[in-house]
Amino acid sequence: MKYYKAKQVIADGTTISFKGEKVIHYAKIDGVEYLGTEDDPVAEQSVEIAAQELTYAEIKPILDSCHLMKTINGMIENEIAEHYSIQQEIKMVKLPETDPARIAYQTYVDACKALFRPMKQQYGLIQ
Image (cartoon, rainbow, N blue to C red; front, side, top):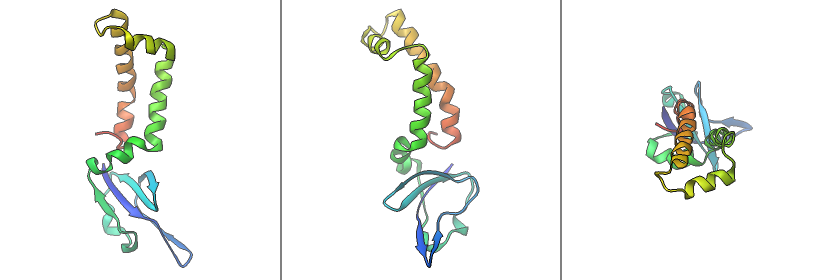
């Protein structure tokens, strides 16, 4: 995945924004869009939008707080909630790490996270 930030410019009633196929829009902050794509679309971008490639480390804080990440994390939470209530989870984390119930809980949580890891990777949210 390649990551970019670009301005969205409105000139003469026309909106100029980042172009490309299969572009994922992660966030828009102060008029700057943060995006990801598998393609290499920078050559076809308008100069006005000032498209700039970002490293994963540079965009990671945006990814961690974007709507898409929150949605997938909510799916993980729902999956966990099918087996453990909030009260049960609080109880589990208070148990010693070697307690069989805590181990079973942690194993289930890890399995739920692993279930959604490919989706996060597909959308460029994690590497």
